Image (cartoon, rainbow, N blue to C red; front, side, top):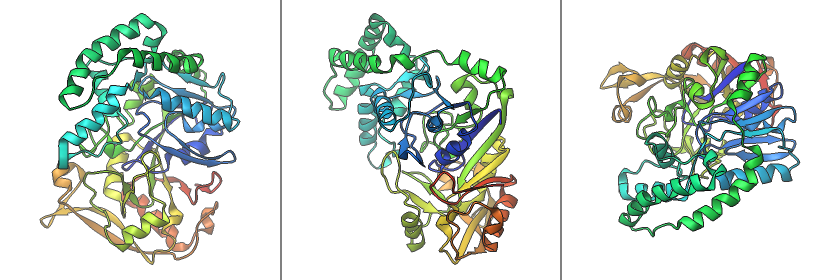
Length: 423
């Protein structure tokens, strides 16, 4: 396996956690390298059902070490709650969880500003998760960030916080919010730090040694390709780089060390929040996908928008990320559809078009071009052998491969860890 990078190929919620959990069994390390607790990877295993937001999904295997690398922005309260939940469930983390001191912190003012910015936008709101992710990354790139490592020196942390509150309190007051107290924040964050300090260590040497020793490493992507800050449906995107190239900046592993890049996609398409969605279904079929797929966000609880599989999107995602293989999830959700559509491209004003032919405004106007496939109307849930799939299900998967130009390696047929086909 060596180094495998797993990336969501749509707008997030593709089932990356399930694929990571399956592959982590044979991995030495699983690494989160970007995003924050705006990501939610749902895992169902022998320990129970977990929605992991910061700690890498592969932590459930006792021989697998978990790394939260420098590219992640940290909400310390969320992190502490996850650690407590795992310990309560019998998952030991001592000597297995490592957190980079280079991680930027999500501060109380980031969450407030996230909410206030959205409110100020009115009908033009972006639809953020409200977790403070965007403001935290904004501070990071504008040299105003506070890092986890700053908490090792109380004077350094206090000085940096004082500077930020001089700026942030003025903005908060201007937007109708009360000023924040430095003493209260310091007290809270120093208490937080006591609880996670044993896990804080520079992660680069660990990963350097692991790659030099040919250890099996999974790089765990958060969100999805079309939420990427550069190549997604801007401004309805996330603050970090989602693409495969972001892994080097986010954890320090050279691109030359990455052997496999696995794109994860649902057998249909979903999206949370605002932004263009060419194959969206707003009719009874869309509602059927919502209910049968239990399409509610693991992070926000928001109802997901649903639509048919968009091969135009996945084709682009495969090209820009260099996918070596693809995993298709939630195959079983399509079991009760007599006909299923695959979007093979777009048209605008009668002319053939594609994802890169325009911006977000352009994508909101395009019409999907569909290929209609016959449904299989038979249960696929729990199938682990490709030969046992209904013929029309096999045809559906082959058509997806043909359209996106990448081989399908995994097909998930249910929530459980073992409900998967390995091709």
